[in-house]
Image (cartoon, rainbow, N blue to C red; front, side, top):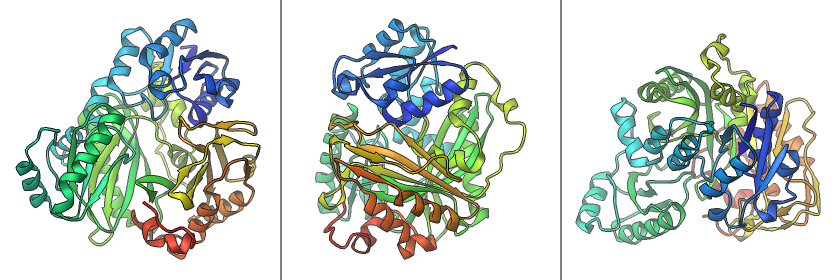
Length: 461
């Protein structure tokens, strides 16, 4: 496995390339026409242009990606996150074409990619799940929907069965809003994922979003690399992530870690993955949400507290190295880590993306103690309207949460971006917010604290 094609762009493509190069592997970038001069293209040993700027014709174009692999004599394909990273069809196509697939078995990707099916798998494995419905298709009778909603109870969430990241999810407070919300989420899911199937799930009013980084050995065993809290969200999209703080009971977290490993063992899972839970602060109950069968945006948090390179583990496992033997020593969590996502967006305009040319860019000094910067952007880069407007992920580590937070504030103070607007002011406001300082975070934090974070911001959806 000497040459790896990264079927992605931006910061995750750059990050994967770093691990490939550390392992002595050559890298192949793919790029849309507008990304021809992007940083991930410059970092790669080889590059192949895709036929369009449109996502479905470029980074989500299976045939174009396989052709790029053939043209560049690739040995393996790493999907990164987003795009086709959780497409069982893409994984099968890669394997059928004779390339190594850096990821779990396609059948498991398919099973866990359907959230309804994943809930059933989790329940069968003995992992708690929230009350909810079965699959709701576009022709599902209203009587069934109303009956399921009555059994679930309001408020509830309408969620797409396919996809990830909370895209299109809607909160419903009462029966009169239900059918319209379901039609809306179905339409959104159909456009985004090609699958309009949805389901409903009980909504927990004050909850934390907890996730567990796992790595399966493919033999019915695996490990966890501890947890992350991702409660700071807007529109169900994560903004600030951190490792688990002392404000969460260690005994309960051990139970959550074991619940995650139940799923790993039940599936004979192979590779990196993340299992997400909802944690009810009031009752300390926890519930399975979903599993992401890929590397996660916030995986650097886990790497910072364990000292492991998760992407390197993925690559070594794909090469046939027994990861279980590579990890002979018990994995320990050291200190605390925080990650902030710096976006080109306008928080005061409903977090509208802000495409344009970055005329000037200064990011924190990544050589400083306890500071890491993952980015696929440099001065002169274009933030395209076609793709996610992330500029960088800034990650800090400290021996305590307080030290990690102070380092993050110092790192954010170094940031200077010209040419586009960013969410920098919002990130700083979150870090100094009294509730965040105390660790009193929950999934409605942004909604409830927004006037304190940015007084001139009217709403956050």
